[in-house]
Image 1: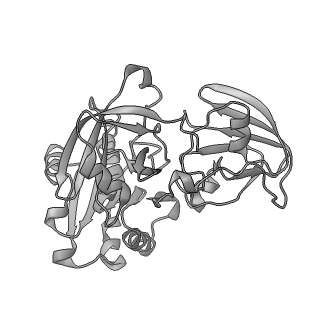
Image 2: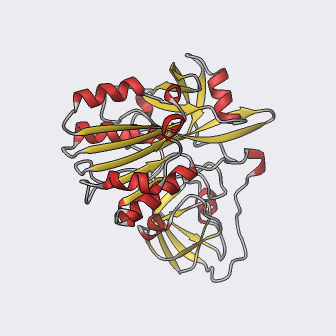
Image 3: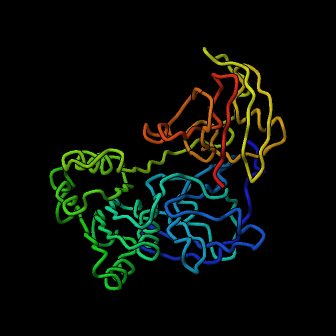
Length: 344
């Protein structure tokens, strides 16, 4: 895997949020300010050393891009989690970490809408960024359901209390503790949509929790187009990943590829079955990427025109595909012209 897209950032502070969760704040050199400009709900990919390998791991930003504060990710330990435990055990203020620029589309299109937010455990991380941004940049109401095992597991407990006191007419925070109420069920969560018709719904947490929320929103009659879910998968180590260059794929064809990347537009020719990310690299371009297996979404870009097939996809849901997103590391052209645009 090429490491040319990674930047080395200094850890400015490590904050112990709970017994099993830490936040890591980064110093951002002025020269990287534009490249690390981010939107609420996005994540960073960290490159973590492990034995004789490197592990790419995606962690959501809990900071808000609209506040005068350092960029911050929050990491909760996972049982046998190689990345989360290494970070929480090893990294101290003053250390450096290799980081890719922000990525992801778990991002509100309009911060002035009403928001119905559901977070489970460390899933509160991107949700907090969205919540704070909506309160300071918009005029809508925000309702947050935050589920945890017990009271000791609640990340940002005091901060959420302060925000609720600061915005009493616009923010409602509802805590759900499994130790008290048991696990959530769709019928218990569905009533939370009352009074929030037309709201945008953002969901992040463990898979059973997110499935529960999705079922709850269906019961409540909420349009699936209004429900946005953030899913992360554990990525393989770098030694176990490589980018396919040319593959045999039915329907693939040679194509004229237009790429908008980093403020420039390039035109290149791709042969039949050539993976588009590989073609860009062949021409000396540096598109964002990490896992190379269609799981991390770092290489997400918009299919402006043309047609592609994805060899693998564990990152994009049907709505994101319908909106025109694709994965450069898994895309092969099925039309003679393709136009891709990477996020600014």
